[in-house]
Length: 109
Image (tube, rainbow, N blue to C red; front, side, top):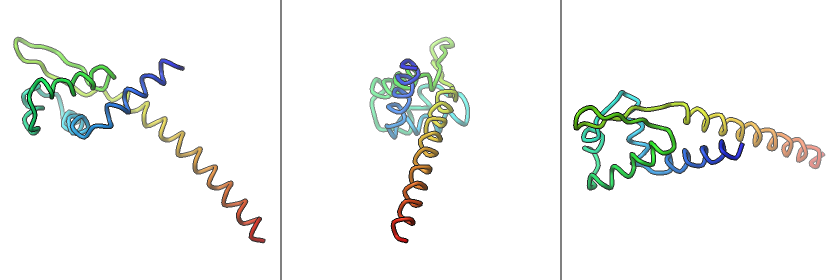
């Protein structure tokens, strides 16, 4: 369980940055080379590759090198784990709010 929690922490950290979210959105369309991924961003390539490193470290992307070209692809499983966590949280809070609503109705009467 602690390992899963650490993985989830890394995924949410990665998703916390707009550049990394944009990269994931682009990769949802298919595999792309670093140069293509970096093109829309106004930053030096070493800074951009740090973003790719964060995404790869948490398992959201995988890279491969063919000749001199490194390309990346999306790995959706960590996103699915984050989604499950958010669904569980939403269900818990909906239950708590329903309980609060019921309590307030009783107090009002």
